[in-house]
Length: 255
Image 1: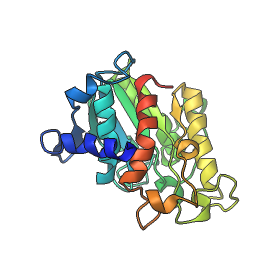
Image 2 (image 1 turned 90 degrees about the vertical axis):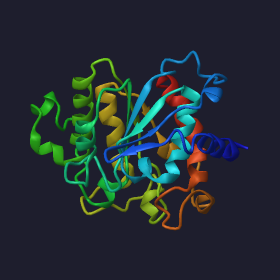
Image 3 (image 1 turned 90 degrees about the horizontal axis):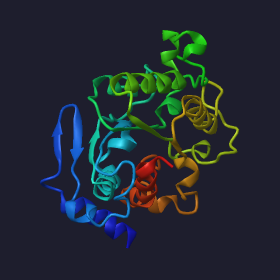
């Protein structure tokens, strides 16, 4: 039933709701669903949401999740994500560049990818690119420096913006991608779990609400094949249907 509702949410507006230009991808809400939403009294009902991230935030399968947000929150959802992106300034069309290119929105979602870890970008610490290091531009090369840059830049655009952070999701192409106790590091000497912990520490310092998708995803080595594509890195529509209601509930009020 959950998958049916997710797919219905996408199909209802498959033609009139999708608009795309070279810089972003927009989903509009279905008013008939929004009018019956349990989130009508929530903080972010009827707001405009911008999403930044890597392929997991922008792949066509992700529209199942984002259409659900749009419908339940009566929200316009605009995606700036680019495949291969990370927070590090060295990782693709980074989230730093995406945020720079974005307009003013009510809600900004920073959706962490696996790319900084898998491509051996330095993890850094919560102090990177903050007053603690006098906003050292060299720290923009780290995951944490990129996170802190994005938060600062968003609030320069809109000081009243709601910023929400989604941690990286699990991946199953290697043991280190889904085992929080794995001791196998990447070439920088850090494990994937350490990258995710650093994401949460940056947000703790900045006072940004975090959805710990890694822990709340409910997917492990026993059922991953149900929810992932053959590469075991990217989720299929069922995977997005599984996490989408959790994301929508979090986006409604930020907790």
